[in-house]
Image (cartoon, rainbow, N blue to C red; front, side):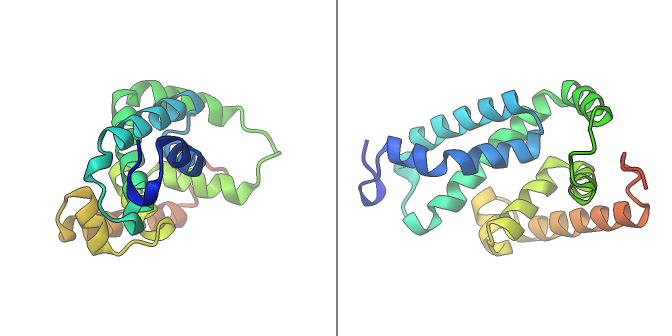
Length: 167
């Protein structure tokens, strides 16, 4: 299959695999579920390839599909993930950088839909208007999710990371 600028499925998979996997893992915090989300993301990308019109938006389009897919999987596995994350957190050793652990714990307190807009805004550098368009939601919804996520991060920081981080 050839689409935008002659890119084929293999080339797209090769170029975007790592990014899609990291995005899914960032949301799911589980290697196997992230692999499933990555696989499902590429199935959706290739299935909907004809809908992609602008190569300049390809990166954001694939990232959006990856975040939505990971959120769907997260919601299906919420209880199982919560237990596993608790067990994994107990087993964390000193090899991890404390600040990274602290930030990840703060981010764990943010719901997936809020995490999604943070990824698109601050990692993908999309405008709020672009995020609203990609996610098919209102601009006000994007702004409120970003505000709530930032507020939740700030609250966690003020509390000293009571979400599982020890001072």
